[in-house]
Image (tube, rainbow over all chains, first blue to last red; front, side):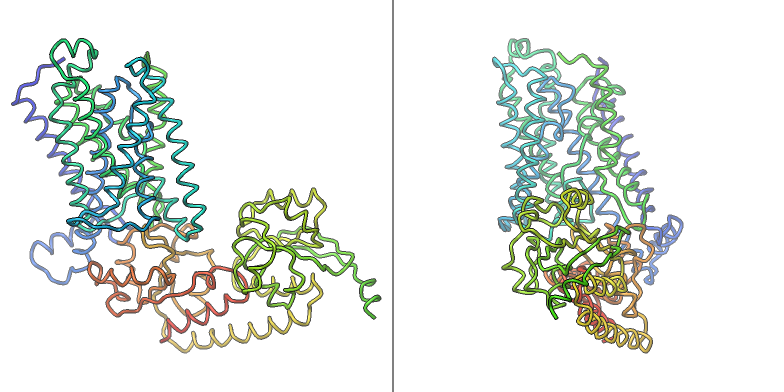
Amino acid sequence: MQTVTLKRWLSSISILSLITLIVSFVLLLYGSDALKPYDALIGLKSLLTGNIESGTVNTILFQVRLPRILLALITGGALAAAGAGFQAILKNPLADPYVLGISSGAALGVIVSLYSGVFLSMAGISSTIVFAFIGAMLTLYIVYRLGTVDKKIPPHTMLLSGVMINAIIFAAILLIVSVSKSMNLYKIFFWLLGYLSSPDYSTLLTAFIFAFIGAAIMFSQAKSLNILTLDDETAATLGLDVERIKKLILIGGALLVAASVSICGPISFIGIMIPHTVRLLAGYDYRFILPVSMIGGGVFLAVADTFARSVLSPAEIPVGIITALTGGPFFLYLLRTRRLV
Amino acid sequence: MLYSAECIYAETFTDGIGRKIELTKRPERIVSLAPSITEILFALQLGHKVAGVTDFCDFPEEARHKPKVGWLISPGIEKIISLQPDIVFATTEGNKPEIIDELERMNIKTYVLNPHNLNDVLSDITEIGNVTGQRSVARELVGSLTRRINAVKKKALEGRQKRVIYLVSTNPIISAGPGSFIHDLIITAGGINVLSDSPIRYPRIDMEEIILKDPEVIIAPDDLTEQIHEWKKRWSGISAIRNGMVYPVNPDIVSRPGPRIIDGLEIISEYIHE
């Protein structure tokens, strides 16, 4: 394990943030065939020099593309951080919000809120994200309890209960959708595969606040997570309140999952792919893994989303297809190479 | 007279996917496996012979009271058999091919429709008329529908072509491209479907696609138009939004390949040439 000095931490994070900025800027230039990168660049330049005729370019860059890139950064980052946290406390390399059914739980919450017509809005926070949080929390609790055998969580029971809960929740979602005979079938179909759109900035802010609180809770426990990876008893003898740390991570994770699923639907495998790649590259210190996963997850989703909307232009495919196509094989690779028990 | 008519009724028909159907008598019990087919049957004054419809067949009102055979994609095969139909009308637009194979194995005569555009709808009506012995009613219906289509086409030639977009859904944004009936309706009514270059029939698109292609008319299912009017806050750059050219339509009449699709055509034409 490499030692982390504040200086090294700051310099790594700022370099990665700079890379994120550059990638985001490049992605801002890519989109529909009708506004090609070069034209976008020219439009951007004329915007800076105060040319008023570029209203359309302005709208597209800052109302369509920028919110979508920001959403990808928040969502991808949230899922990757949640995955990293779950893997730490469950001591299971395959733990991931999607695999464990937490994303589906949040999705069920969203669909219940859509169909029950509960559109309470408290202090600008829509009920959808609150329902997503409740759904994620409940599923986490159930999977956690079901997966626990003799106060321990063997990897296979955890995974199996997650997979089964996932199947049950999906059946429940499909039941609600088919019984309601709604015209929203398309919407649900796309949403369940995970898709990004261009939210308005207030929606974006809500998701950001949820993700920020979730991430803050997780980061505050990063040091403890390092000790927790040893094993629970050792951690306890070192004076850690293991149960409290686990609870905090679960709540933080649920907040992160709710932030992403309430807008984008359940997007698969980011929570598993990114943290493992980060561990391979940056070692096993959670003070590194958490922020770097967050940045990496965001950039990965933003790039994947740009592919999703350009391969079939003018049509786009759900970004969840791309994350699943890349993440599925990665998951199988982990399953084959890592010892599970 | 009636007796002899029954006797000479022995004919072979070829359906929309090239299958041969042999009929030895005029069908008295008909099962419909799609809302559009039910609408055609009722328009051909065959309502009293309709023995079963799908759960989605809600027009005309009497269709709601017919025995139900289940969903469009997966109708209940046992229910269909129990209705003892002389003929079943199915469609490639919604029924799974397996259903047709299964009905064939049960020796139930099944005529499959395969409509892709307005003309196909007219020839489907003619064909159903032939199969069910309602030739003259069908001829009259097709004649009047054709006259209405021609009136719309004439108006299209006189008016200015406008850029039109049809929205199936707003969140996510899903539109209609070539291969969909809506596309054909927009073109026939003298509009330019801004998604003519879409490689798929019902593409999910990004808002920037709409902004750049700047439709002058937006048509959407009635329950979505209110939401689209709210776009004014963020997307007032789009001509249709700025000028309030956002129009509601009953999605059934622009997507079901039955006689009412001509109503849809006339409504779209009105919106374009207003």
